[in-house]
Image (cartoon, rainbow, N blue to C red; front, side, top):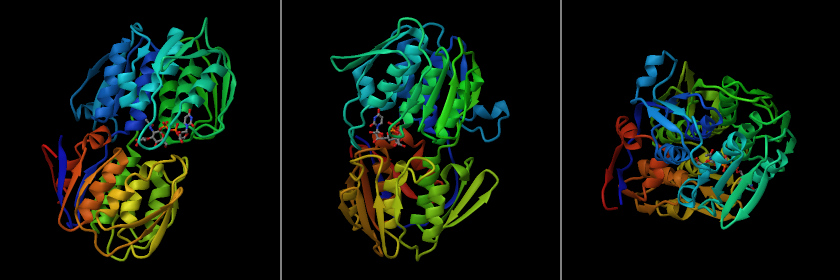
Length: 433
Ligand code: EPZ
């Protein structure tokens, strides 16, 4: 199994181009099943999760054509750097999302809404537990039920059926759910009548999906707010839609600049997608400058500890919590980090302490006391963001770090080593870790 080897302690300097957002691209790909016409997505990232979703969609009858990296530029769209992917679902060939795929990638559950809405039937494996929490899909199912689907749970599978067409309804989510909102939006777009989604997730990835659905002929209003109104239409058509920049990749490299006390220009991204993180960084003493579609992040020694609590958007994203903890481990003073989204998202803590970080977990909060110097260590990661927080700690630490289980990183960071190497990091992938 591959590992990442880092010789740390080098301040990073240079430019990193940010790719399209994984968590926007995945639901957009699923949305392609809502029409028999082609949906073209530009600025697509090249990631293991995207390939997994592609495999699942092909099994369900979606034809996928992709262009090479950089071909997006030919479209003349500003900031288009990634690949272009065209998905076409002339006919649904299968209604089953098998356990093997859903277990590996929970976002597979996003095929549920489109399958029921377009085909009247779906069989999707329940995802089961996951490294960061129990992560049930009960809210997805309740919403589909409210739209008129019959839901049965059998042998680990959700079997959803609807006799004719889904019917618009009022759906009040008791808890903000990104995937639940996405599944509901896709299903409601083809339902009969109006659906009102209250306490909808406001993440930018939801906006990207709603804009895409509207470009396909849907009628969604309230985008960006907690109340989404969907007037169902009988059919959707093809469209061409850009994937928004990856805010978590942006934030991760912003932390890479700060934790190494270097300076990075993050290109092809948007400040507004990650304001909460940049605000916290500024409070810690990191310099942030916006310049067109670039953000320059620079830091010197003497960063301050800043408390942070994860929240649904526009709050501080849970997907940046582990990276923030790594940064706070190098700041002066203490900071309290509270995780409110997932119940088990501190799995990186024991690994960070192997670098010499001083972190104490009390329930949903962790107290981090900054240390003057982290030192490299062999470490092991449990999920995508935990893995990258260990890479960040390794970049800052003196001596050698070996991060094992890098397949987690490949799920969500495109060409991570190359991007960091180009900015002076001594980082390489080695076999057999
Ligand atoms: C999305 O997951 C992201 N994944 C996650 O990113 C991200 O951490 C999460 O949103 C929160 O921002 C994708 O977009 C593909 P939720 P999702 O439904 O949709 C509970 C990464 O590292 N809940 O908003 O699965 C749930 O257990 C990943 O890129 C229910 O109780 O998250 C959690 O506590 C990891 N019942 C909370 O809600 C449900 O039916 C928020 O989950 C659904 C969710």
